[in-house]
Structure formats: structure tokens, C-alpha cells
Image (cartoon, rainbow, N blue to C red; front, side, top):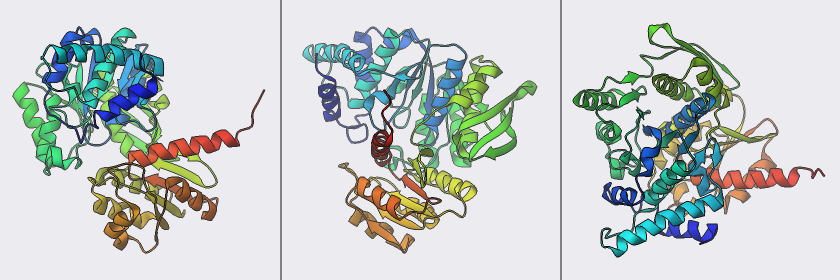
Length: 439
């Protein structure tokens, strides 16, 4: 059996889900047939949207686990290790299990290729999706929460028939694949809706809302609308984490104490609450799940004196949420902003939102083939801030910010989830080396 490192290298050589996107579900359907349709062995919740998919998925999974279900969670992308994408009962798949389930999927692929039933090898994301389904089946998962990778209609995860289809807030991202109009993007996300399957819609802009509602009518679905059918009342924050009462239909109320920071999480939580309610989860389990939800890399605190904040705000909607959090909850503190981005992202718009919040902007080099170099990035965004400095690496820029920042300042690492993942590795290593060894 191939080692974990060899397995990961093979999967990465298949190409990421954006560069190698070969649209259509036919390959995965053939593969799942050969594997014995593992995805029908468990119930599922399917989540699409532009922003908030991961946070909402994490809240739903935590609520289901609090209710006593054996849960699966499939998300993307990962921050540090690919095993983060496939979890059972809150724990990542172990490297040995990852290799074993890869061997099961790879053997089925090789059979189909040899028989001529597959002309092309399934993509990276298709393979991972099949691996997740097989692992959930083998682990005895009762219900899995599945996050769409890209779009919805043609995404590999759309082979499932879920108990509930959830669509979080829709905004602009991946326009090259999904279009540059809100209604086009919404139509792709609405591709996860299925006749006879319950649906939950987060609050949307008018164009996206019209597209979602039109598709729901075509399918005879009456969606639950988070923000209308479930409303947040008596909202207040405690150190950036929000508490409120979720008021539902027929007078049902949920006392929500969110563990994830930022006002935007209120909307995500309402979508999660509406979903858990449809699944018959009781109020106590929903409340417990919201308190215990963990979702790394989103307003995540990883250091003090100065505080280091990690947030994968890679598109305009994410940038607006981060800027709002900084204005509302960190006003008056100097912000050292470490920013890097991929070439296909809306860097001009994101920089225009985030850079005015910063005392100083550092542009570290990102070790990723699709990343803009610090020089190219600075040429695009220099007009948004008067104090921008290029860096050779994140480690160098982070060390520079820490050396110059006062204890009350904040260092914010953002712009790309690849950068956030690298920051998690660096800060974890620093904390490990700083911790005393206890015999």
C-alpha cells in the first residue's frame, strides 16, 4: 500500500478542483456504482453557497453530534492537512485510514479505466468525494454534512439525495466558472435542490433570491427562509461572539450562544438552526452544538500580545465581514494586515475593503503556483494604502509584524486560505517550541 505522503502527492497531481474542472457527474456516478453506492449508506445534508458554507456545515454537524448521531463532515478546502476534509464525529480521518480508503477507490478507478468505461481518470475532488463516502460508510456514519466544492449543479457532491439542501449567502467568486451575475451564480447553486427534498435558504440579495425562489417553485419546494421563518431577536455580542434568541415558527425559540466570532455568523447560525429543526433535533442539542462549534481559519485567534487573527477572507463578501468585525470589535487598535491572494481573485475590490482598516500592510510571498507575487500584488493595490511593504515569506512578514507591533496591536493574516493554512503551521510550531516539556 502506498504511504500517506505518496497518496497525497498522487491526488495533488490530478490537479485542483478549479484548474482541472471537467464538468459533469458521469465519472463519479460510474465510480460510485462500482464501489457499491456508499453514499446511500447514510443520510446527508448538502450545503452550497458562496460564503458561510463551512461555518454553517460545522454548526449543523456539531448540533447533530450533540443530539447523539454518529456524524460525518466533508468540507473543502483544507488549511494544513488534506485529512481535515473528511471527519467522523469531529475527528479527522487518520493517515492510515486515508491511504486504505484511497486504495479502495483507486482499485475501482483502475478497473473502470481498464474496461474502457472511463476515458479519463476522475479529478482530485471527485476522488476525494468518493473517498469520503466510502469512509463514512465504513465508519458507520448515520448522517453526513457535505459542503459543495464549486458551484452546485455539477459539483461532485451533487450525486447525493439529501434530507435537506441548504444554500448560504450568495456573492461573487469563481466568476470564470459560475458567471458574473448574481442570478447566474444562484442558478448554479440552486442545482443542489431536488424535488421532494426540504430546503433552507439563508438571507439573499434580491437577484439571487429571485433565482432561488424560481427554482424552488419549479420543483414544488417550499423553502424555510433563515432570516424570515427563523429570526434573530435580542442580539448582542460578547468579545465578538454573538448571542441571540432564534425565534421560529409556531413560537419555537432557540437560545443561541455562538462560539464563532463575527456578526455574519448570526445568519449562518439561523440557517443551521432551521436545518437542525427540520431534522428533528431538539433545542438543547442545537444550543449545545452552537456553543461547541469549531471552524479554524475564520476569525481564529492564535496568539496574544499582540493578538494574531487568522481569517480566510478571499472574496469581497468575506472581506466585508472581516472589516465589519474589525470596526465593531477592534476599534482603536492598530492593525498589521498580512495579505496575499491568488491570481483569479478580486484583489482590487478586497484590498479596497480591507486596507483602509490597517495601520500597515505587509504582502508576504505565498508558496502557491496560482498566487500573485508581492511585487505584482503591490502594483495592483498600492493606491489603497500609503504604507505597504513586500515580504519574502509569511514567516518573515509575521516575525517583522510581531517585532514592531505593540502588545495591544492586532496582526491579521488574511486574503487566501493557503496563507491562513501556512500561518497555522507557523504559529502552531512557535507555540509548541514555547511550551515547557512536562514529564
